Amino acid sequence: MPHLFTTEVRPTTTKWRIAGDGIGSCNCAWGCPCQFNALPTYGRCEGVGAWGIREGYYGETSMDGVRFVRAFSWPGAIHEGNGTRLLIVDEAASPDQRRALLALESGTQGGIFFEIFAAMCPNVLEPILAPITFEADRERRTARVIIPDVFESRIEPIRNPKTGEEHRARIVLPDGFEFKEAEVANTVRFEVKKPHGVAMCHENSYAQLSAFDWSN
Image 1: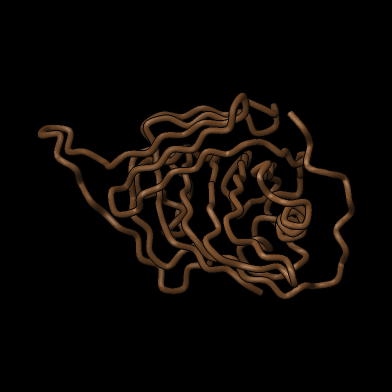
Image 2 (image 1 turned 120 degrees about the horizontal axis):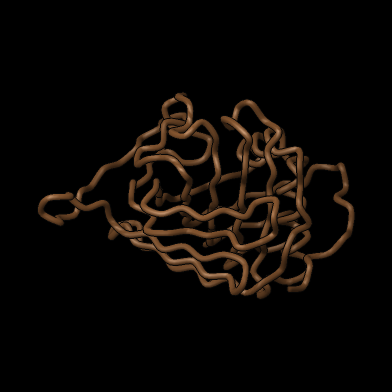
């Protein structure tokens, strides 16, 4: 699996904005206590997110159509820090787009979403460049993400355990830094196969599907 690159991120800030659709899965029960300032279901947090940029820019670089995945692992709750993170960029991204995502990931370019996770995850694994299949339908609460030999995830609606009927629920966070409104779903299964620092596998756990619009 090819690595992203090793160029250092410059400390200067570049104006940027990215918007599109994203999904997230973690090891918590449906609803995810973290969304309500409560401790994670099992005392620690492991999760992944995948995003497809519909439109955006980083300086003079168009970010339209770029896909990326982030994997996180914490020994406890997110706010306690000392987490480990991994960035995976779709191999279809241009060299300039790859550099832009690495700069955003560093947390040095502004934007509260990237700044928070950079602060809470000081242990950074070397980014990976790989083909990403990303399919998400927020209205239907379904999604599928595949990165060969690295990651796979499947999301579907929560179902009534008695009747099998789809159960719909939303989380609304007017001041949310990750999303303002998300559809809640069931992660049938997600697995990060490597590297070891973020390897994980969970079934029938929390999932969210939402629009995102981040900038500095």
